[in-house]
Length: 114
Image 1 (tube, one colour):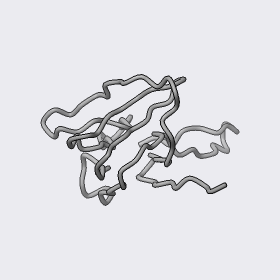
Image 2 (cartoon, rainbow, N blue to C red; image 1 turned 90 degrees about the vertical axis):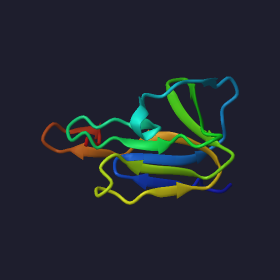
Image 3 (cartoon, one colour; image 1 turned 120 degrees about the vertical axis):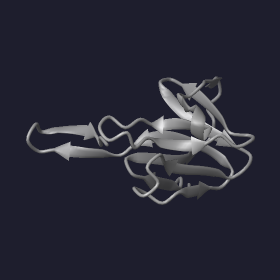
Image 4 (cartoon, rainbow, N blue to C red; image 1 turned 60 degrees about the vertical axis):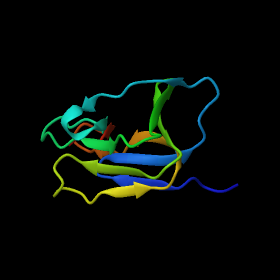
C-alpha cells in the first residue's frame, strides 16, 4: 500500500485521492476578477488560497469533504502572491483539507487560521 502524496500550501493540505463513488459536483466560492476558486478562505488577512480555474478543473463534495479534480495540471496560489509560492499539482484528484495545530492554552486540536 502506497501513501498518498500531500502538498501543503499555507494552512491548506491537498491530499492525492480517488474521487469517491457518489461524489457530486459543487461550485466553490469564486474571485471573479482572478478567475480563481477559493479553497481555503482567509479569516483574518484576506489572503485566500485559490485554484486557478483552468479548463478541466472541477470540484466535488462527498460526506462533507471537498475534492478538486483535473485532467490538466492545477495551480494553487494565494491572493496575496508574496505570502506563498504558487504550487502546480499534477493532473489528478485531491482531497482539500486543512492543517491542524494544538492550542495548548485551550488544550484542543484546531484548524490553522490565516
